[in-house]
Image (tube, rainbow, N blue to C red; front, side, top):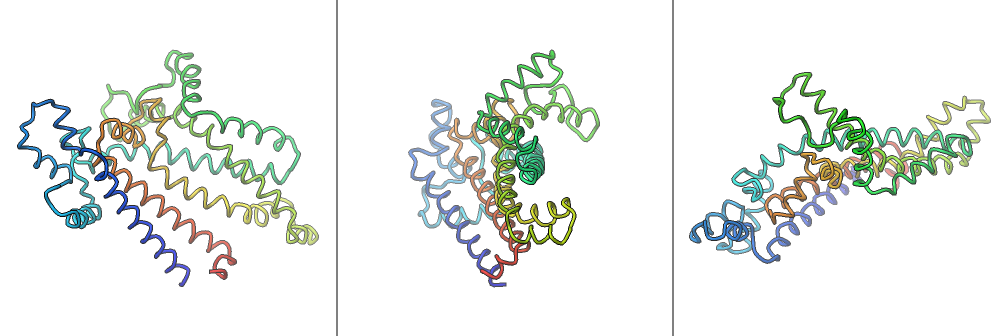
Length: 328
């Protein structure tokens, strides 16, 4: 119980600090979204509308800073982040809600697949050290993990899209001539558009999981309880999965939880390379257009998901490893 209270306290304090920074940093920067919009339309908007625009964007410079801060916290809790400058006059919450499913589907699923494949390959490589799998797969995937996302994406486009006369799409999330909906034609088209971006992420990210898991298993195999299990005549497969892998995977779980938290931020370079309509592409557009309300909302979303992921990781680690509970 004490462990849970301490972790929840850490979660709340970190969240409060992040939200406070998210409030003050944009206000320390020169200008604001309302002024940026006035400049964009070059005199076509009446200057008297400046105050109304500030309120619409979630700013009200006429009020004391403390009042603005309290209102900001209330709006953050209720999900009111104002109006997006990039997609004006659409509310920020609606803009984020439209992009989030694309990123969760692409980056989320690919991250889970990369973790499962990387952990499995790393487990076998570490258990059968110096075998064929250990000699070939880890070095290859470690090299691919050092390649830039956009470079891998461009190679895949050249080989599997341009080289096959468009068999696999290289642009967007779906064919714009189709009507979005839960029908087979649209779902298949969405999957086809996601193949090349997900391959780019998979090729880059799987090497880290393989190397970490492989090294953890190699260290675990040298432990006394593994020798004891072998001396008792327990089958190698059971020792590998129930003894070695179970302990070796614990460090990976923390990294996996943090990776899931960063899923929401998307893979910016991949989404930019493939014009994929996800959160990463939206975040890049928000920065380019100085869309502070949208940037603030995305920052809050990313912060909350990362903190929740870390919290779940702590609870899961404590559940699997009694030493963590006793140390706490």
